[in-house]
Length: 272
Image (tube, rainbow, N blue to C red):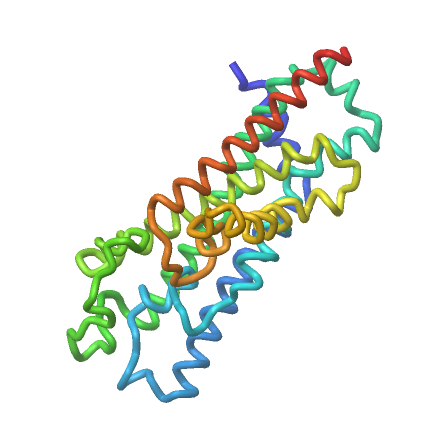
């Protein structure tokens, strides 16, 4: 049903330099994190005495060696460059009308929303997985401080923390689950950026939409009694948030995106 539009946009994607730039940045940031972890281990002499396993060194869980600014600020901006500016570029190049003659406009929009989520998710998931695999090769796996003892790093479970109930029983599944849900969050934020781009006439502003949305909710939610809902906590390492908080964040993005998309499509139909 959407194959023509999907094929067109996949081909469009492979011809965008920003797509390859986003992949490079994602891999580079995860590689830098591994280097920083090793450097920290060497600095404190912890390779043989106090070494944490790969799960606790993971970029989305490590509370000591963190790259919060890159994960919260840079990643959403870079991933928004993949598809979010496509509407702006087509209007600027005056190819929007020509494109409408070749493919269905509504199907094209939904195809780009879907690809925004899937492509961003895949780039994030596999780049984070790359980080995890390298750390496993260096530090090993499990709830251990060193290779030579079985002492759990955190013996106390926090049932209210996101997926913490499976951390000790299966740390690998725990890390893969965190990776999945954080990658999905990035995908939804980028799709939201693409939808908001219909109402924005500046390409640079479009790239900053996810960041502005995250900051705005972080400032407003505590004022209306929703301080436990935080997009920043969902994206930063070792966050103490609940599954309900994550679900609320996902629900809010979907609701806001849906409302804006309906408004745009109705307005476009009226103009036509």
